[in-house]
Image (tube, rainbow, N blue to C red):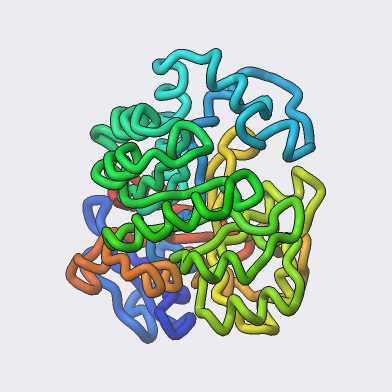
Amino acid sequence: MKYIAGKILTDKGFKKGYVKVSMNKIIEMSFGSCPKTPDLRGLITPSFVNMHTHLGDAFISQKNINLPHDIMKLVAPPDGLKHQLLKKSTDDEIIKGMKKAIQTMISDGTSCFFDFRENGEHGINLIKTALEHFPIESFILSRPKELQVDENEILRLLNISEGIGLSSISDWEFEDVEQIASMTKKRKKIFSIHVSERIREDINKIVKLQPDYIIHMTKASKKDLLLIKKENIPIVVCPQSNTFFNMFPPLELMKNIGNIILLGTDNAMINPPKIIDEINHIKNITPNVFNNEDLLEMITYIPRKVLNLNDYMQDAKFLSSNYMILDERTLQPIVNELVGSEII
Ligand SMILES: [Zn+2]
């Protein structure tokens, strides 16, 4: 039996407390002073939610290619380098990359993720194969194979995935996006889309789509962010990916406006899907804007609340082992030898 004392992240911020660990499992969690001299100290947080991944391109990170720091050249459909490499790759290669990325997420303390899955039904089947036997909750947001609407295809996609995640309104005829969004909402599935990443896009059109959440908003104006706040639409920011393309999300403005901010790691070919790295990156690019508490809430309680997730919440409140122990200074997971294998 070991005691780990420190601060426990609750939905109302940090509270002093401790956990008792036995046989690699947290068996008790209490607030207040630790009854014994603790074996370790750290931050005790629920497991993480990564709100935006593209695991399908993880295999590209193994290829040692010098990726262009230009969105159009790298990721824009249909001809960006990523899409060319996807066309040339085998299913096995893509699945192997996904499995490695899923393993990275689990080791990092992520228990739930939302993936934008390219390549229609086949793309969904690939990630489902990769996910077999992994103890992680996944939300697969699919998209049509081509940049056009085929109602039957959309219905089939909605039957076998959690919803639709599109590239951006700039890649599509707006009427088509409207139709896809409405079909998705009608079936009570999730609709999401990248917004104002490379160029500022018409926010009124986005609001019309009633997305469950939107990605990026790097080029959004204050007016855009105010409207998104009014409409209560969560924004998923992916600062490491933005930095790769030499862009920066207006995080301070979002905070001041009171936008709901969630975090995602974006393309797995650019950086591994380690959500804690996004937090450390935000602290580097916008020092003194957010504290650890604000940032950790963005990957634990806030996504669970706004998306009504009950992944780890299903467990008995304090007997769940879905908790991480982090080093307060580096925010990196510690005591993997104690709880790591039982995180999920
Ligand atoms: Zn993305």
